[in-house]
Image (cartoon, rainbow, N blue to C red; front, side):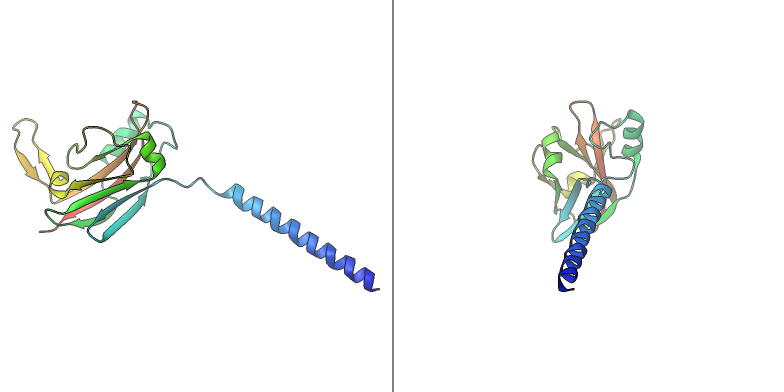
Length: 167
């Protein structure tokens, strides 16, 4: 009788182990690949975001239609900036390997960066220049765009943040 109870207990443990392994495999197969993050820090405030919906090519270059739509998108997580502050933008190491740029009220970077973070003067990000007159104006709020670049073919992923200037 005791031998029957011992083998029955081993069978339950084996069944429980098989069930746990099966559940673990199902859970892993259901997981999506995590998306890369971008972070904006001003002073002691930080906001982090996943790629903007519709602006993630999942490792492939976005179509021209998607790029146009992403360039005109507004919004994203908001952070307040005071004049003269530094705005720090960070990306995942995989994004840095591809290269990335930042676009504020106008182009901010001349060349793509391969670093995981860069610092910018807030005034530069809010500055707009009229292409016809050359006159410079400052916006009160700006959609900051971070774009991961493909191999010379355009952006693969874009993140959007809203910078609000506070005097």
